[in-house]
Structure formats: C-alpha cells, structure tokens
Image (tube, rainbow, N blue to C red; front, side, top):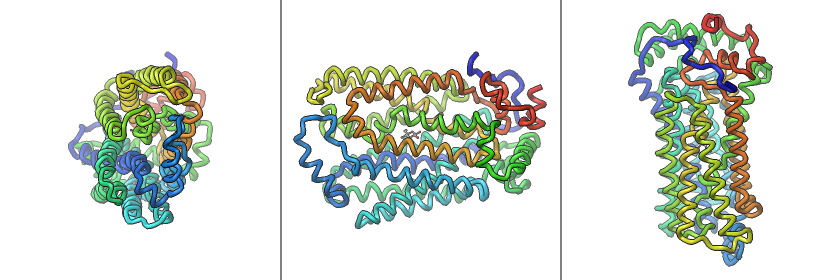
Length: 514
Ligand code: BGC
C-alpha cells in the first residue's frame, strides 16, 4: 500500500533484551517536564497581553487604540494590532535562532547539558520579566525565555526517544506533549486568577510563575543520566553500557549497545552534520524535518492556544465566559493527549495522523460555515447563545483531534527518524521550522482574521487536507522500530527507497533486511 512502508511486525525488526523498568519511566517523566516551560509560555502570553495594566505600562499606544476602537462595528478587526502580537511572537524568533546553537551543545556535550542550559535561561528570563520596569527588560526576558525553549525543545524530544525502549517510545516521548498541554492549561488558570486582581501587578505574577516549571526542569536535568546514545557518541562507552543496563533492567545489553556503537562509527565518518543532512540519502529525513513541524502549525492550533479568549470574545461571549471557554478547550487538550499516549504504540502513528486530520477538517469546515452564515463578513451579526456554544463544542472537537494527532506526533515522529550523525542537527531544523511557523501564525492571525473572516477556518481546513494526503503517501509507519534501525523503514518505502542505497545501511541492518 502506498506509504505503508515497513510493517514492524514483519519479523525483520529487532527486539533488544530487557524490560520496561521503573527507572526509565521515572527518568522520562522528569525529562518530559521540559514541555511545561514550553506550554506555560504558550498559555500565558495571550492572557497577559489582554490585561489592561500590562498594556498601559508597556504598550500605551496599543492600549489607547484598543480603548478607542472598542466602539468599532466590525468584530473581526477589533483586535488587529501588530504590536500586540509581537510580544507573543518575539519569543519564537529568539527560540529559532538559539536552537541552532542548541544542536551543537546537544551533540558535543550531551542532551542533558542542553536541558540544563535551557532550564537556566528560562529561569532567568522569567525572573527578569517578573520585575520588568521597561520594554527593554521585557524584551531581554523574552529573549531568554526563547533561548530556554529553543534548547529544551531541541534536547527533550531526542532525550525521550533515545531513552525509551522501542516498544514504548511513542508513549514516553509523548510525555513531552502531555507536559506542554498541562503547562498551557495551568497558565490559563493562572491568568484567569491574576486577571481578576486588578491591582496593577497581576501580569507580573503570571509571567514570574514561569520560574516554577523552569526550576522543575533545571533540577530534574541535574538529576538525570545522559542517554546511552549520546554517551557512546562522546566516547564514554563504559558509562553508556552501565546506563543501558540500568534503563533496560538486564546485564545483557550487547546487541543494543553494538548498534549504538555502529551508528556512532557511521556518525564519525561525517564531519559536518549540516552538509550531511543535505545529501540525497538524507532527503526523506530533511523533508520530514521541514514538512512535519510546518504542517503541525498550519493546522491552525495556535490560533486557539494563543487567541482563544479573543476569538470567543469576537463571537460574542462575555469576558469571563471567554476565559472560561479557553480553560475548557485547555482541559480537552490535556485529556485528549492521553488517548494518543495509550494508543500510539499499539495502533501506530499513521492511523492517529489520519483520523485526527479528518476530524479537524470536519470541525473547521463547520465552524467556518456557522460563522460565515450567522456572523457575516461585515462582522456585525450576532450568534445566538446556542450557536455560540455549538462553535465552542466544535472547537473542542478540533482541539481533541489535534491533541491525539499532530500535537504529539509533530514532535515524536521527527525525533525518532534521524540517524545519529544528523540527529541533533535534524532536531534543530524541526524546532526552527516549528517556531518559524508559530511566529508567522502568531503574528498574522489577528490580521488574517480581519481580512479573511470566517474564510480563515476554511483556509486552515484546506491545509489539513494537504497534510493528510502527505501522511497517506509519504509518511511511513515507525511504530516499534528501534531508533538506530530506522534506515530500513525508508529503504522499504515505495517512494523514499530510491534515496537509500545499499551502502547506507549498516551491517546489522543488512542482516535484518536480508
Ligand atoms: C505545538 C504547539 C501548540 C501545542 C498545543 C504543540 O505540539 O508545538 O505549538 O501550542 O502543541 O497543545
């Protein structure tokens, strides 16, 4: 079948010794807390930028504009302001630049060092933002937060995919996304509380509390062992063996260790991962490293994550109801992620991608149609309470679909497909592309809403159709395949196989393929 690729149950895929130890689970849970800082920031910025005291202090012109424009008739355009969005999106620019440096640290000094550095930068950034007296301090703080997520998102998904045993890699890697959704949800609740303070400093509490997840991740990273793959890569074979024995719960880890050593010997033949990733044999990896994070953002999810309160206000909910609706969709996001965790290693990645894609298209088309019909392009219509609730329900259906498909898979699949020599560089591309498109969406959404109106939902639906076809034809199933054996997956894929020549396959992979 097109795109089916390697069926992991064809007997060729290796099963290493060992079991799923509690040590590996605890380790992965601690590492996954890296997602908390990412999520907390996603959730906190939208709320903070809608707090009057914050706007008045740092962006007085936006504040004035918002006050004077509130009488404007066209609801679609009431929040259109580039200044307002730049606060949210600036972090992603810092993140996308820093992730390039993260790739070097992750490769040379290990995954753990990058997590430590990322946590510390985020900690400092949240402290500076919490006490910010002027826009300069605010921006320096935002840059440090960006560096924090740039490093964390580069290192954590790799860490998880390397630590996890193949049969549980999907679930353990998704701990990252789970932590992200929890971070978003908690930030929404914090904003809900501080927004009610009206004492002038509510926003300070919201931004300073980012220090809590940062502290958890930094302390966690100090306690964690590095991955055996990274230890082998840095020539620390004895340590790698000891770690492997501990995480797999058996002394006999020779086969897995040998594969890592082989992968690392291969890696040493290539001096520069950045030029290596451009070579033909890495074409499938490069395409995935760009397409998957790009598509993840083109689902339009961050329209909901960043601007849910604004969106709900636009369609006629009151202030408090809007914030509550954001909390509801945040909860759906958390719970739907668990569906993915429970099923990804049983049913595979492709089925989740496909089901999630179809469900997203249906709900986006319906939301666009309702808003187009009842709200009108002039943006002067009114939704009845029943219809507004229906829109909220449809948005929850959409969020749930994202949360068990492109959300976690957008981080899992890229982190498990790269060979060791380009793994760190590849993951940087993933983070860079993801942040670039997050930036674009964050920056352009309010303007796009103003111009495209309900058609914006249909535009995102069209993107989801394209990405679903991309999965059907070009994304192979990676469930259960050991991470250092992934080349075989491409070698057996109807389209990608032409890029993988026999000498790109390591001796142990050859044994399995024969
Ligand atoms: C995405 C974020 C998004 C979040 C929502 C993540 O996988 O990368 O951009 O805000 O999911 O849960």
